[in-house]
Length: 81
Image (tube, rainbow, N blue to C red; front, side, top):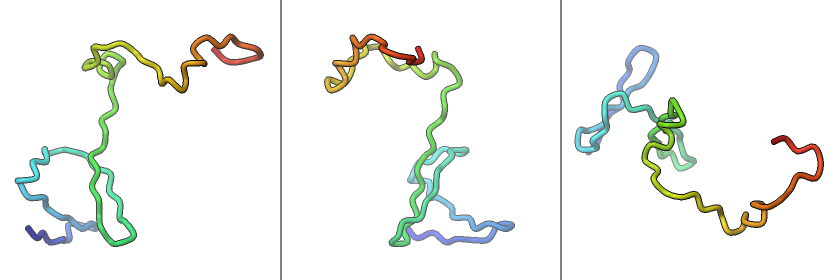
């Protein structure tokens, strides 16, 4: 499907076809690539609370194996805790 840019006020607007199933009010980060392609990347909603941030997490924290040695490091100077 081809869409057309139109002027609305001081901006240009492109409508998105329904089959893309974009919800009204969705925010995007827009960027133009060197080849002229325009990307719309859905903006991530920032959680309002710690509860919201972890609401879908039901597991156990597993640290990165490469960082395992840091699990038992004791402070040696003026580190901030």
